[in-house]
Image 1 (cartoon, one colour):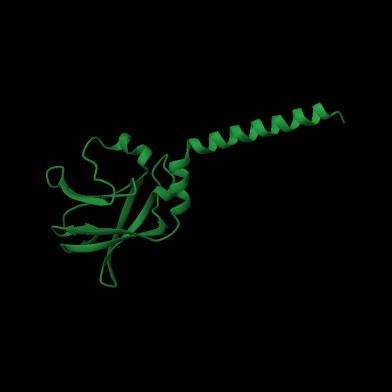
Image 2: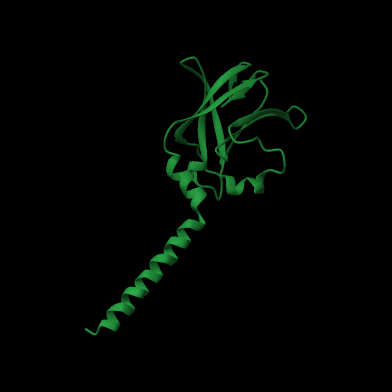
Length: 153
């Protein structure tokens, strides 16, 4: 086989491989999040200023460690990956006191959901919103945003 045919075929394969790499990198932040979303993750500590309902159960005011589980929340939100709606546990000491669904928003999508005033990486905000109808816990961990909404008890 002539050498120029082999070189042409090799160049074609390299071009297709490079195009596939570029296409794969277009979704890199979300794909990377989905790959790591299978493990339990400590999200940090939050102080909830009043009693709330978490998954329909009473959760007293207090400070809780939040732990992201590997369990997807059902049903999935339309158009969203199952790994981006998961359960978070509210832990005091060694005991799980409650759990609730957390919406995970990758850094490249937070602008679609929130305006200004997002928490800095490594911090959280606990806010009473919408005429005291619910408490929002917003955690920014490494640029990934975790949003939990709890009605007052």
